[in-house]
Image 1 (cartoon, rainbow, N blue to C red):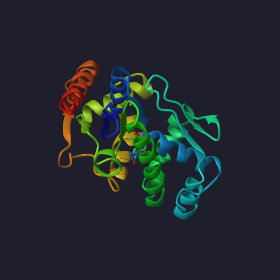
Image 2: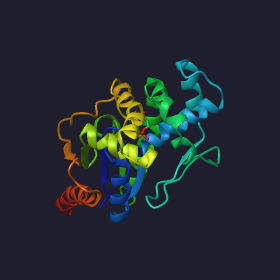
Image 3: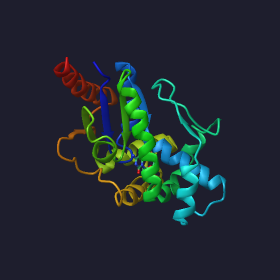
Image 4: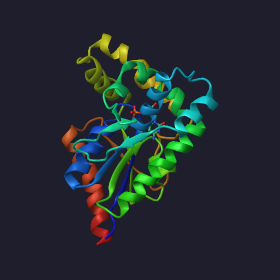
Length: 229
Ligand code: DC
């Protein structure tokens, strides 16, 4: 049997990274965080002083990006030119500018090509859970399981506020608004991740705990795997 390919998309704060990692670890599959690839690309351009509005220069830089994705869900590292960037790419500075790189169509073409390579390689192994904004629709529309993970705006803002500020009071929620809503609005101009495409199952985590959401996603994967056996 070939490894199962699971594609998960969703907006910011939907919990898709945490859920995808846990499910992959539980099922012995690889894990690919495609958002981290866009973040690494943004970090690389910022570090080189490239004007992110100069789309041709950004695309040129990203084609040369010496990116290494490590897909162990228990330790999913990301390195650029041998340097571990897993922490620095999550900074507020990068979170604020990453959409400028992620909406560059030449950058998307290059990173999608690399994402497909990683996904294809996993088919001969234990399979993969790949998450992002356009995995179910563009990167791997032929995935065995395709899921759109959604949550209410309120739930997403509160989650991100707790993640970034350690609290979900009004001030923390206001400070998080740009990172969640503005970014999703920008990202929505190049990917469709608010409504499920045909054949994509929606999982709404607004009223579910983390464990319940993991169980729901796992259940969908195991049902498909049982049918493949
Ligand atoms: O999921 P995240 O916040 O780490 O994503 C970082 C940025 O990359 C965000 O602006 C959305 C964008 N992105 C994308 O356009 N396509 C993907 N497949 C994954 C992320």
